[in-house]
Image 1 (spheres, rainbow, N blue to C red):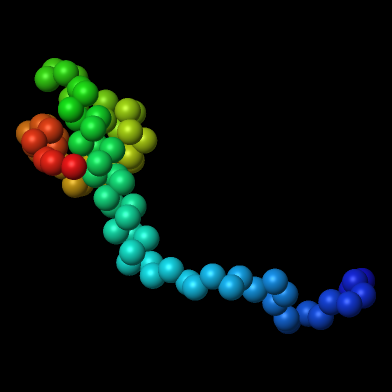
Image 2 (cartoon, rainbow, N blue to C red):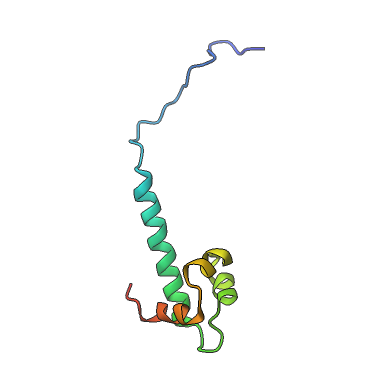
Length: 83
């Protein structure tokens, strides 16, 4: 049963905010992810920095880390990046 005073097919309460550009959102997300990885890599000891440790520490998916940084040398290079 349809409630009184409502119409189907009409959207009530539309947001007055401007829609955000999805490229900007993706860029902000990538920036946050890289900063998180750099901070965690700097906190890790030389023997404990590997893909599994970094994934557990940061919450970044393991598959992404293996794809983006295939070797442990690539992970160690994160320490030298500036934020």
